[in-house]
Each structure stands twice: as structure tokens, then as C-alpha cells.
Image (cartoon, rainbow, N blue to C red):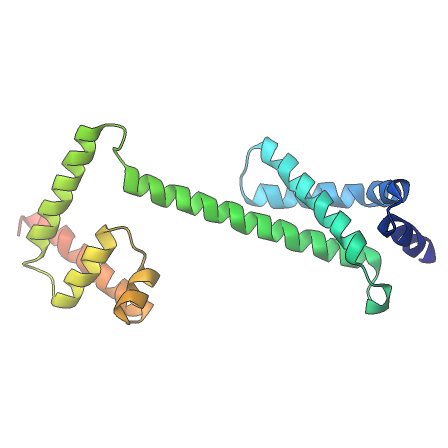
Length: 184
């Protein structure tokens, strides 16, 4: 145990060979964690390399910030630091994926201006036609919803619960389906 602490202290003092010793000792852990968290994102294999790099940087940071008086072993501390960093990477990556999907929903047909114009015109007609069948509250929710806002955003904007907004969206969809099926 004191061997590791000595090596950690040397690495913290700038001894590159000491850091290499630590890195070699924990490399298989870093590799398995990087693979596990990159697999969670269903990412291409090149993304695994990014996760491994992040794991190594988090490991280096754990060497610099480890406190032997904390009551935790260096290995456990390093694993926690690396895990936290990789979880953060997964969150960022998933957030970017959600944003891309959201952007692509807003941008559908943008490559073809004619298609985009048709879609906007259909949205206007649908909104206009739906006005006759929706309550005042549903109209407000529907306007926000077709503008691309999520239920949570709408609920904050309208000072209503998210459940209330989700229920309104459900009712709106049901009414629109009836309109589409019956023509009324």
C-alpha cells in the first residue's frame, strides 16, 4: 500500500516515470471503463478512443488531487474520478444527440426550400383548422408545441405543471387524429 502512495507522491511531484508506472498498473481498468461508457452511447469505435483519452486525463487529475488522509485507497479514488468524468462525457454526448435530433426536426426539408415551404403551409393550415376544436389552453400549448418547445419548457412558460401540459398535448393529438380521420 505504501508503495502506491510513494509512486503517487512522486508522480504528483512531476516524475513522469512514476506516472507511467501508475498508468500501466491501472491501464486495464481505464480501458474497460472507457469501453463500458462508450458502449452506453452506441458510439462509433473512434469515440471509444475519446473516452479512453478522457479516462486517462481523469486518472492524471486523480493523481494530482488524491489525499491519503481521506480514508480511501488511491485505486478507489481514481476509479471514482474516472467514472464521474466518463458519466459526464456520456451526459454531454447524449445531450448533443438530443439537440441534433431536435435541430433536425426543426430543419426537416431545409435542404429543399420547396419542401420546407409546403411543410410550413401545412402546419399553418393544421393550426388554423385545429383552432375550432381546441380550448383556449390547448391552443396556447399547441402553438408552443408546434414551435418546437418541449412540455417542460411550455409548463414553465405557462406556469402550469408539466403533467397538465402533457395531458393537453395528449388531448390535442387525439383531437387532431379525429379531425384527420373524420375530416371534422
